[in-house]
Image (cartoon, rainbow, N blue to C red):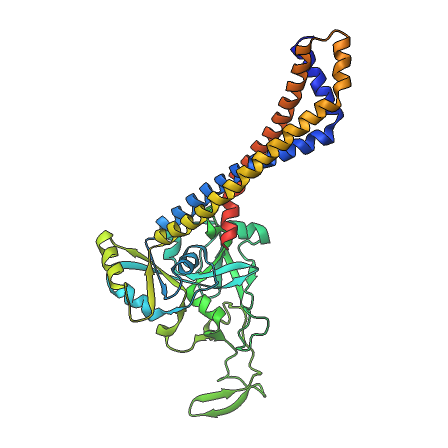
Length: 394
């Protein structure tokens, strides 16, 4: 019997015991694929983290965790970040050493971050509109490509913000945002966010609001007292939850604009010298701010991740070795249980070398199935790894 005959016998045996073969191939494939998948994910994470951090020279925020501040500015992570005031951004801008881009990422809509910023942000990140137009007024928003696909958003749609607490004692109402445009996919965290002007973010916070014109109102039950041009109203005054062309002029802000909140400020120094001067000035600021280099924070984060990765890979290699030993034992026991089958082949004149080939082909076919599983998992990681990494950062 030639090699083709041996391969035919091996294939017939594997086809006859499909379930057992599949389980063995899965055990081998998954065990071999896990270290490869972990290593590939780490490489993707390193590439994703460092690319976005390297493109962001400096970030200003409140004193506290430099890493949380970086994640808020780069990935709009809302947890663990205190606010700074607008006047602190203005101080940085007035230094004449840098351009500044405000970031107010504290609120969300349908689980997506709502990011208050300026039009400079879109030019900085290289974002452009794929459908519709850019924001032009209070209450407008543009959404990332994946967010738009997931919720079926397009120009003309509305997106309602979610309250930060179930019971909002401050009386801040959800705001209905008007979607004016959908951004082209950038394969970054920007694809999962909704962007508004920073004034709209303050509207969501409740610093600004709109209501019926109580000065001209003739409705009973809304005005308590009119005195010296001032009007005292009751809670019956109708508050607007959506900005329209008709009620836009009825929206107004309260308090000192310099005290309005931001979660971070992206600083774009004019050159390396300006960056060095700023870092020196903000080594120990008295106004409670913190100036960080995102690339340094990401390098520190990746160093910690890689330490955990080494331990994980060691454990996976140990597990893989154990699975290979078990697989060898399974094949040995299988061949021993089939001794009568092989004796029959010997009795009808099949050479012992051919029997050895049958066994080798069985092992080879299971190995090929396991290899196909490994390649499939590796392909999935390469195809979806970047999206998975970005999702874990939200």
